[in-house]
Amino acid sequence: MNHTAADFVEDAIASGAILFGEFTTKAGRRSPYFFNAGRFCTGAGLARLGQYYAHALLASGVPFDGLFGPAYKGIPLAASIAIALAGKGRDVPWSFNRKEAKDHGEGGSLVGAPLRGELVIVDDVISAGTSVRESTAILDAAGARVAAVLIALDRMERGPNGVSAVDEVRRTLGVPVVAVATLDDLVAHLAQDPARSRELAAIRAYRDAWGSDR
Image (cartoon, rainbow, N blue to C red; front, side):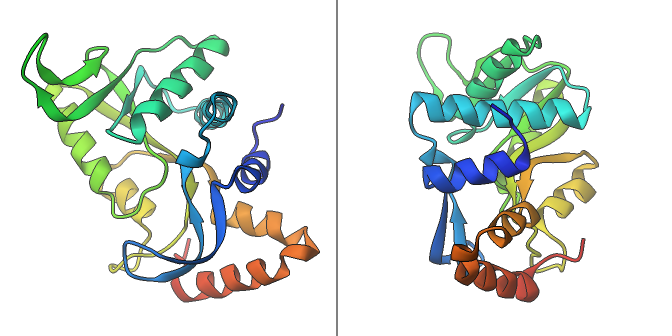
C-alpha cells in the first residue's frame, strides 16, 4: 500500500480516527472535526499507522538515532513506528517514560533503550506543546537531544500568541516538526468528494477563523 498524506487521511476517516461534527478543543473552541489516533485500534490498523509515520519520517530526511514515545499515547506509536522502520531497513532503538516512577525491579521512570544521541519525539498531534516540553526535559536530563517531533496531523491552528502550536515548537526548540498530514491535506481530500461538501464548508470556515498564517 502507499503511505502518502492523502492515503493517511482517507484511512483515518475510514477508521474513525477523523470524525466530523462538533467537538470542543483544549482551547475551548468548537471544532467541526476531531482526530484521535487511538481509533487505529486493531493490530492491522496500528501497523498501518506505524507505516505512515515511518514513511513521513524517512521522507523528511531528518537524521535521527532513535525514537521516544511520551506516555501514554506515544508508547504504542513509538513501538509501531520502530517496527515499521525495521521493515524498511532502519532498526533503531526506542524508549518511553512512565507517568509514575517504578519503585521496584529496575526502578525509575524510563523504559526501553537508553536515551542517547538524536531522538525523535513521537505524538499524535501538538495542541499546547505540553507533552513535547516535558519530553524535551526528560531527554535533556539524560544527555540526549531532540532531532525532531513527529506527529500524525498538523491542525494548522493558531494559538493565543497568533502562531500555531507546531510553529511554536519549531521556534522554541529549533527543531523540525514532521507531520504525516496537515489540515490542507484533509481539505484537499474532502474537496474531491461532493458528499462531503457540508464538512468541507465547516472546516474551511473554522480555518478562516482560527487557521495559522503559514
